[in-house]
Image 1: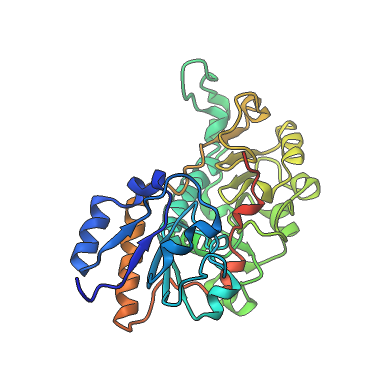
Image 2: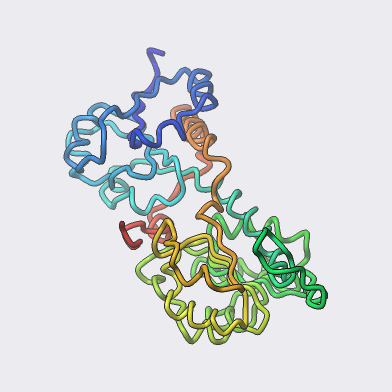
Length: 343
């Protein structure tokens, strides 16, 4: 224990039980690590974190942690590595952090696997047009026998993916055994050479929406991407296609989406919303061609995130290669939570 780096988990107290699990505690003990938890109640201003970070060498962050800029790091000259117990680090990192040479890691790959599994499930729900004929609960629609024959086999489908980050890559891995006719991707990080090597079709965003049988929005919410899908892209979606959004709601203009869904040309499967929890009087609740889930696509492996970051700390302090390191360029392409509606 004497050689244990000074590790601080600066997550809000409300989230500590979610991540500081028995599994995480066991892993910390196995590594000989002592993890100091944040004991300050409520949401703290950036300056209130300063004294908490004195002498910290390895920092665990999560949702609710502040951006690690010069204000927060004012009295810290020892920080070497940050492990984000969550997905996107866009709201955590700063240029100053990278300039200090601090390594940034994230549990995003583990979360991405979970989101990818949800996406695969919804791909099959959409291709088999389950919503059009299945009976789910008392008060729901009756079984629709005539519409049961409208299934599109995966090997005849064009699956379009907006994004090529951890979620998209994990999803493509799960999707391949179904042998889709085409896996089309729109993303600036995907080069033509990479697409050819991976057997993907690199296309423009407008073409992706116009030609895909299932459209997945899996890109990060950045200033450039916010509201990028509007009336034109939505109107181009094929009759009977499926739009799946597990990225962030503001990627799509909500008003334009509602208007297009009211025409009942295609199905939407949504896990994310402009306002969360989704208000009971929201128009989505009145549409029969919409499937809603309560922002849960990434839930399931939360208890393993912190242990994964401790493993990265172990690699770092043993001078081994990191497995989940995030470059500044990649961090800037991830979802920026400040672009989400607050409240």
